[in-house]
Amino acid sequence: MSTTHDTERPRGRWLVFGTCVAAGLAYLGIGVARGQTGLAIGGPLVMLGYGVLPLLFARRNEIVGLLAGNGSDERRAQIQLRASAATAHVLILALVGGALWTLATGSRYTGVFTGLCAVSGLCYLAATAWFARRG
Amino acid sequence: MSSMLYIVRNDVRQLRQDAGLSQATLGHALGVSRQTVIAIENGRYDPSLRLAILIARHFGTKVEEIFHVDDA
Image 1 (tube, rainbow over the protein chains, first blue to last red):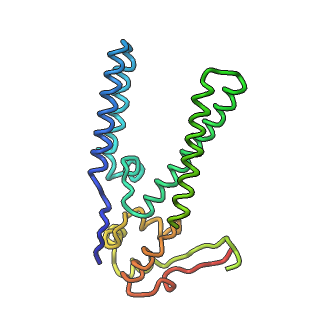
Image 2: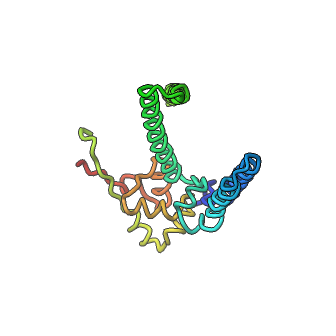
C-alpha cells in the first residue's frame, strides 16, 4: 500500500533555518544600529542555535522535528494544534492579566494590552465562526 | 453510547508482529511516522477514521476487528 503522505520533509527544516538566519540578521542590524553589542551578538547566536538544531536532530528526535514544523502525519498535526492552543491560552492569560494590571495601575501601556486583548478576542470569534461553518 | 469516557484498545501490535513488519515499515506503508505507529500500539493515540480504515485494509480485516471500545 502506498499513500501520498511524505513523513519527512527536509524543506521544513531549511525553512526554519532560513527564518532563523533572517531573524538573526535583523537582530544584528538592530543591535549595530542602536549600538547594543549584547543584542548584536547574542541575538544572532540564539537564532542560529535554534535554526541549526532541527537541521542536526530533526530526523532523530521527534520533538525537534515537530519544532521544525514537521506535522507530516495526523498525530503530529494534532500535536502541533494542541501545542498552538496551549500557547494561545497562556498568551491570552498573560494579555488579560497585563491589561488588568495596567488598568489598575494606570500604566501608559494600557492601550497596548487592551488592544492586543481585543485583537485576540476578535480572532477567536472569527475563527470559531469560520470553523463552525466549515464543520 | 451513554458514557463519554471510553478506552479504545487495538490489536495493531499483534497484527504487525504476525505480519513480520517493523513499526517503521508499517508507518511507511500507512504514510505516518514510526512514532505514530508506536503511539497507536501503546494506546496513546486513537487514529482518525481514515487511518483506522487504512490500517484495517492493510491487514485485510475490518476496523471493528482491530479497534475495540471499552466503556469506562
